[in-house]
Image 1: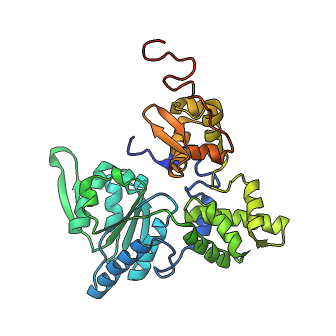
Image 2 (image 1 turned 135 degrees about the vertical axis):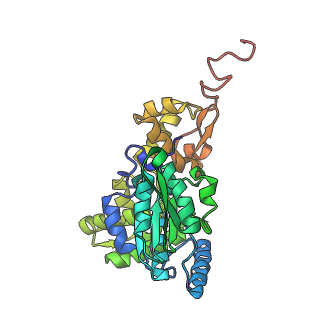
Length: 362
């Protein structure tokens, strides 16, 4: 996989109701729903406690906070935490992303314009170009960069001193970061998926801010279908709100939430049309597998990358699908969830299955 490969690149992920990538509507709404301080931030209790200690200590010293690396799946609150870090430190924040920094000069221009104590949020830091990455090493450690002037033998390096700043890097693929870059972060945190009870808190808070009426059972129903991701929970809440306003009296109950999400094809475990299509093809057409990824993608009518990067991660995490050296196989939980009975005989594609000779041709 290259440095530019990213789950959000797979076709259609941003358009899915249960996709973790942010679309235009999410970006606008999230700005209003984001908590402003650590006390208001829901979930990630260990990360909050550790980060609170880091920020309190920095404020007590009267200096800038250590550089922070946040890793985890999209939609778990990395951008929100970066803004909270700036707010807790009483500092401005500059937001950019790895794909936007393709040359060392791009990074030098950003760094040279920072003010003392400013927070620089670098999203998708693993997708930054290698020359910029190497420049960042010196900037993080010594608050200095060398700007190259001229070309060839006559080129000279002019040292440029930088004011102390805090870099907050966010990544969905921490394994793609080179060790020298990871080692320069003073605090590293991994964002976990949320428990349903935590998502219920997120939904109740968002409902208050959006002026939506919802009872405890309605919030629990939405939380159970939100894939452990606050961004998806807020998106589902908005769609259920629309349904409740048009087809009910505006109050979101368990029944209304279930009816609304059935319209949007999100089932009780958070699977949508694509997820169920993958499972249905795997179970009905291939007897539960094993089957190759390309064959499965053709059967579903999707690109190979879409199945692998958009549908499979959640299905594997839910224990509905397994990746093996021989191909994809369905688990007993997948048969149960789809309401199907597993075949008594081994599938035809498995060694020793019907129509396939044994070891000695018998």
